Length: 364
Image (cartoon, rainbow, N blue to C red; front, top):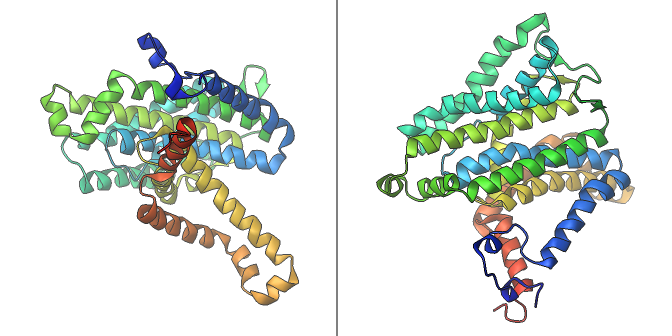
């Protein structure tokens, strides 16, 4: 019974709060480590590595949204703006001041956090629908006005900032290929996930959850709700800035088009499908929202190669050509179906499956 959580006896508080509490879980994590750092980069092709990088970018981008909506109860619909702040901060510091990429990565996160706090200030007085409008304003003020009209004109470069090959380096390591970007992505996802999980388990995380559940009761119990709300906005913006600064390693040029309003809505969809208030939900949602469209596109492509299916469904080539619209339609349909049939998200289903096997044969 040593590999089952119900058969483990803890004698100390430290054991009860350990990350991996059984040998079975240790084995799973070692297998995951081997898969991420050895199997995937050595056996996956450039296409699969590119898809994996998009999954990692989505996880990093949605982590701040998960913190605000899932753990602190603060709705946000303009988080792509803070990704743009991180991306432009990192790019400008490397192009203008020639700072090394690791420093610009951290500074991009800090700038994203500060801008997020600025637009989180109204959360001290408003909530619900009014806070939604405030965070939407961040998207249009930062990206559509500030970055497009002013920041993009720095150095006379026009709208887009070209990123010279080999500019992003960490010491002697130049991040150029998809495999280089993949290794950086895995490290950043692990570090940000660990930071997020530790914050949630700390005094700060308990204060965020109390504010989410009932802010009036939390204030009555002595929680400084203004301080903790603004701290949540800063940490969420920091994660967003890190995500934006990471994404420039996959771009030949950074422009406002990479951080449009649709991406902010997409990130909210990621946590709704993955599960609100769950770190697992961020990962599952990113996997679902990236792999399902890719699988759908691959299926349509395979069907168009067969004349029988083309004759049966003449609209298939048009679907492949206009796949962006198909993707948006699938996104809306997925959100509606999950809200109706699985409102707790994929993380809740994963929790049920895991408990079934852990507690078998007493899973009832």
